[in-house]
Image 1 (tube, helix red, strand yellow):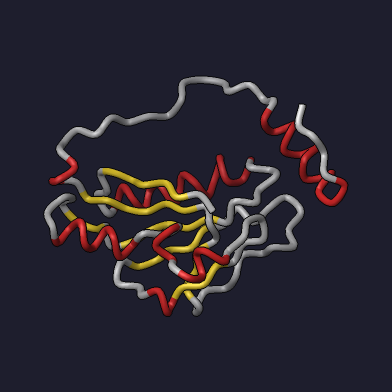
Image 2 (cartoon, helix red, strand yellow; image 1 turned 30 degrees about the vertical axis):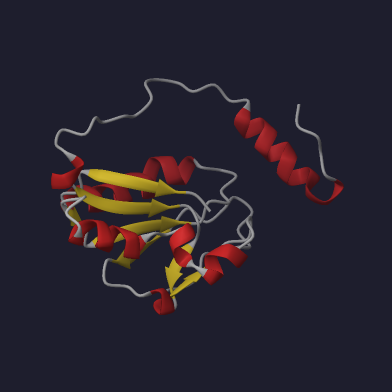
Length: 159
């Protein structure tokens, strides 16, 4: 049993309930069918990464905002901010690469370590206590974007 913090007791209660659920069905996994050096790579983040021009995630939604934001491959760190409440952003504010390594992907493409950088990347706000809409609607929609972009490999970056 997790030890409760008085400040976050409701959060710990929800987390405990979520963590004690049993997984039903097979764990979704698709093996990589080609070398990484030939693969198109995308970032999928739960760190609340958004462009300054995006509408922020709804941080007041008690169930959690299950929407996502598309981050184009040519986005610069100066265009990106974080819209998330549940982690300390100080390191990511100093260097976004620690959480959303887009420049690193571009460098790996130049070095021919990966085949290419996907044209679009996906960002969610990970503070979601009720994931039904995420599982049934928005995550499959976001996955469809990556499929349309012919992404072979997604790197998951938590907040």
